[in-house]
Image 1 (cartoon, rainbow, N blue to C red):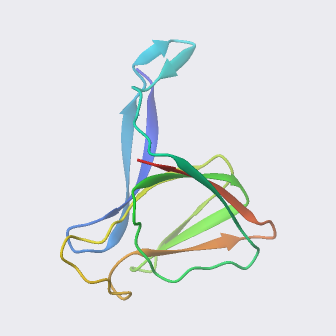
Image 2 (cartoon, rainbow, N blue to C red; image 1 turned 120 degrees about the vertical axis):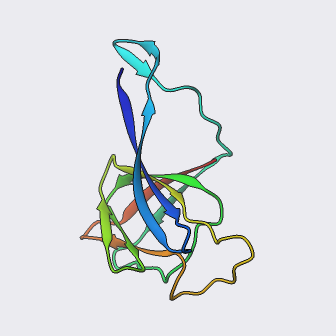
Length: 127
């Protein structure tokens, strides 16, 4: 059975953002068009970030899929690691603030930035 690799940005038990991978079954449809089960969504937004854009550390307020439409997006974590996502790539952003925690920019969240010489265009699909 085919699967879809879901890259997830999540808040670990220590409050820090991390990446992990999870496979979603594509067990519906046909062999020529394998589909996942229908997943819920709460709307979508489109965003364009100019060349040179970089955010501060922040958490995700509402879990959402992030799909890179054009340009490149780098996501940096508190541990100094980062990943770059290009056109057609995606991740599921769910690094929300732990319950009863006050945001601490030295512990929580991630930063994002535009990479290269093209503006970054993204699609956000909320859960």
